[in-house]
Structures are given as structure tokens and as C-alpha cells.
Length: 119
Image 1 (cartoon, rainbow, N blue to C red):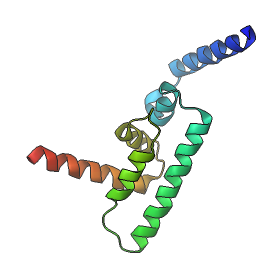
Image 2 (image 1 turned 120 degrees about the vertical axis):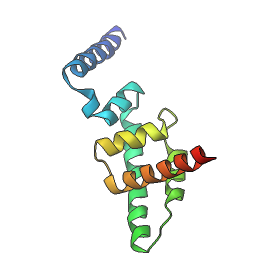
Image 3 (image 1 turned 45 degrees about the vertical axis):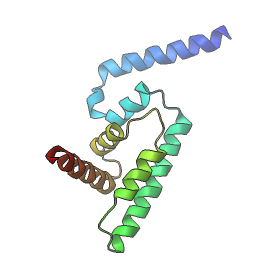
């Protein structure tokens, strides 16, 4: 059991060292995953969920849909509770994952923020 703890400590130490030599601001999604202790399985679930949303987005876009807020609601509702939806969208956008979908989500969030500021 002691060897297992040393492995975890070693991995953690190595990650800390790597984070010092890599500009983590260039990799905000990776940083978010590490900081929130997202497991490999949780990461894979996240990416599959976003891929399905992206597929739905592309299909709806082809069909002439104009409002994609339901996809954003689905994203936020299905997102791992360890992650903040806004931070995750920003991180995905900065790392250029699903760029059209993330741009749409950002647009919806910006429009909602403007709407609530006016009131």
C-alpha cells in the first residue's frame, strides 16, 4: 500500500514540475481538468457528451434552427459537478475544441448577460 501512495505522490510531484515549465494559460482545459481532479473516465464522458452536442448542433444548424440555448442548458445540466459551465466553455474555446459550438454557447451567454445588465 505504501508503494501506491508513493506512486501517487510521485505523479503529483511530476505534474507540479511540469506545470512550472509549461505555460498552463495556453492549456486552460488541461489546467481545469487537473485542478478539479477529473478522472480519465470523467474526461472521456465529458468529451463524448460534447461530441454528441456538437453533432446535434450541426444537424440543427443545417435544419435552419436559430436558437441553440437548449443545447447550452443540456451542456450545463450534464456537466460534471466538479466543473463550472462558464469556465469549461471558455477553456474549450481557448483550446479550440468544438469551436463553432463553443462560439454559439459564448454568444448565448453574452446575450443573456447583456439582457440581465439592462434590467
